[in-house]
Length: 292
Image (cartoon, rainbow, N blue to C red; front, side, top):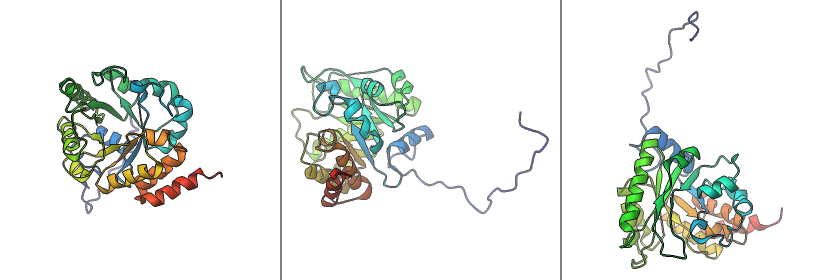
């Protein structure tokens, strides 16, 4: 019970100051509830409105690929420099210290590997995401693959149902159909399908005409890094995507397979958060490689 001996009548009602009703700083989020917005705010920097996500979920398809042989040695030291970590439950539990306070985007679907026909995925249980205190959940949509499109979209829709129930954002990861052209028309369609099915974030690939992909998607779009590129080319990729309206990157191989992953993280953040041009960010990379 509150102390009833000293109840003071309210005085400061701010009658001359109307209540604020400013929109949320990320597009498509004004109608979301507080919990979902709060989790999105953990992932996206409020000053820039963008994010640098570090993806290391490749192992569930590829096994111990180069740069991911030891998550505890290769990824954990980079965690504090990322805005968000994207990984699987096994690697996060075993190899990322629980003292790490960075938000987690949990890879929430699982299925086949590169050794067999891919994209026949199923969802892990919702209790896993809740127990791991994740800030977002991610699942793949195989748009354009006749054998897997319907199943992956159904998985994704189910995941959005779960996300809406518990106020957890869901990121749609667009898979590239083997018969689909890697162009703005295809990625624009795949991204829009993610948003139409309730995605709060869409992860897709940069291509010429990417500004149309972003414009037609009503929620934040982050780009996948894709295959390993020379560092300057990867920074140009980031810069071009940001100029087209991307809300950040979810980059893996172009960071952890870099000659200096930590230096590359710093350079990517310079592009994403500070709007550095590629040459300027490459200087950040080279400076960060120099011994202290």
